[in-house]
Length: 171
Image (cartoon, rainbow, N blue to C red):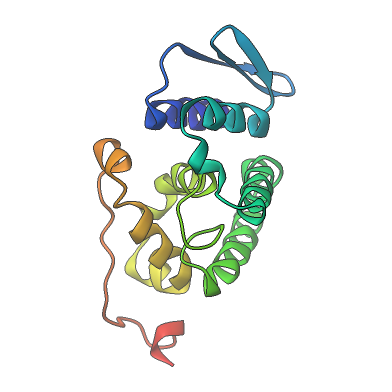
């Protein structure tokens, strides 16, 4: 999955001549003749070479971007059960309670990467599941409006009306 996400992210950035290969310990990203080993390192170097603003504009945003990318590599990519995935989704949902985006109030590489990881799941969620993860749904709805993501990902529909008794929004 890491290889696909890094490849999709390179396309999102419009990066030319990027090679992504799988290795026993992760991915190898080759850009401009330089090789970077590992998911986080590969993504950050793509950002630094293509669109530095996606790393964050403050030290805190850059730290949060690194943290979220690390979480993707160590937790989300390693989920082997529904319970593990559910636990990760609850954590992400809780973290988005007070933020528009993962690292504050602007889109960073962490948001784009997380969107690319979660898209196959969220696109299949029922409205009830979308209400279960209300903050992820709000965040996802905002991120999917990015012009580059719109080119490659069909929009996911969300309801603004409470549809299910007992969801977080109905209280």
